[in-house]
Image (cartoon, rainbow, N blue to C red; front, top):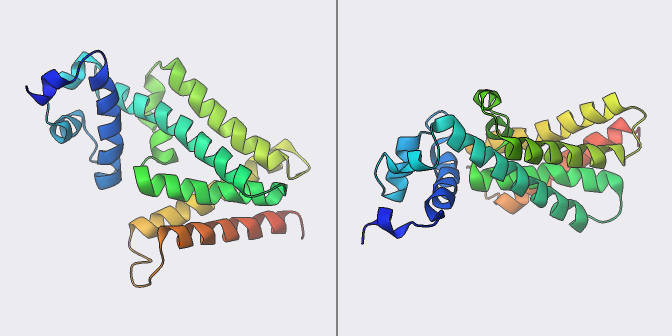
Length: 200
């Protein structure tokens, strides 16, 4: 039986999303295509179009799944970091780093500009929940205004994304740093940033 026939009752749709994450982790968003995902799965180039009319709709489904899963990772990391609001917010940077290193799907994928043309309520719900969660963590640190909470969220995400980019570009290749060690450094940098924001 061919791989294509092996997918049935919606299994192909789920498999396409899973393969999309694998492809993003390997080649990045610029080289992401429906044809490449099909090749990765070993199905015909036409098969994905039974579930997604074009690249942007497939990417939209990936974006929604990434936002949902990243939010879960952030909540778990915040929960593991203890009761201190500053530590809980700092954990976002480590969770972001770990997630993007393993999936290739950071905010550049979750909020890819081409997705604004795709009417996907499920994706919008997941992306909104993701940002609401991070904003709640920032607000819990008792920043004086909502605008400062937004700025703090941007800074924390920039720390996580920065470490992710450095890792992808081989900055840490000469050392013996593991993903865990680099994630811990991202958290430490984010914690210092939060403390500085509060003058501590």
